[in-house]
Length: 220
Image 1 (cartoon, rainbow, N blue to C red):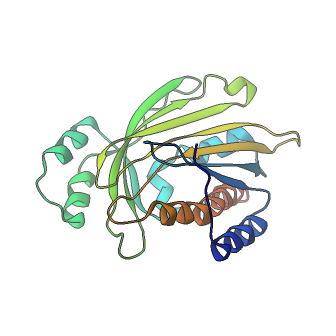
Image 2 (image 1 turned 30 degrees about the vertical axis):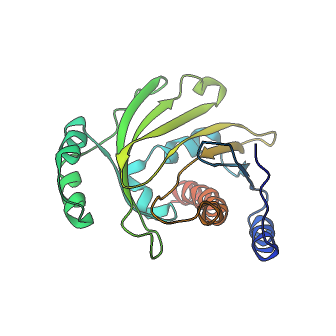
């Protein structure tokens, strides 16, 4: 494992973000000949079941997840159609994908899978990044308030995307200890340090938005 050397200005920004987003902890792992991984963990002020019910709403991610322009479950036929398309134009790709939008095939209390189409809202020059994920959801330990979701990249115009969410009860009642792992990289000419920096800034906001969305629903 390589040591990560962070310039002072970047380190200062990392510390500022960490303090602002406390108690979310974010760190990176660098491995030879493998994508760098980002890890995060923290406490969310809602029960694991409530967090899970929101976390599986891929069709609504654009409403509350940072940097997500569009997201929804897509059928196997949609995956096949996008594999065959010759266009690189993002609007055309989205039009094709929307024809195959579907609901989740949830097996409550069990394990279930699906494909998810996503478009990221990323800053210039890394624009129009889209991809399809194969997602695996595990709520077979829901009776213990434990939930897991993992995903990997099927295809798209990004370099890498695979990771997991883990939810379990925190020590404080009706709170969740959440752990997040991801190795997404937008590809192109983006330096890996810039991708890591973007993740460092985005992930605490993702935790915060997830918690806020759960509380919003509960207060309706």
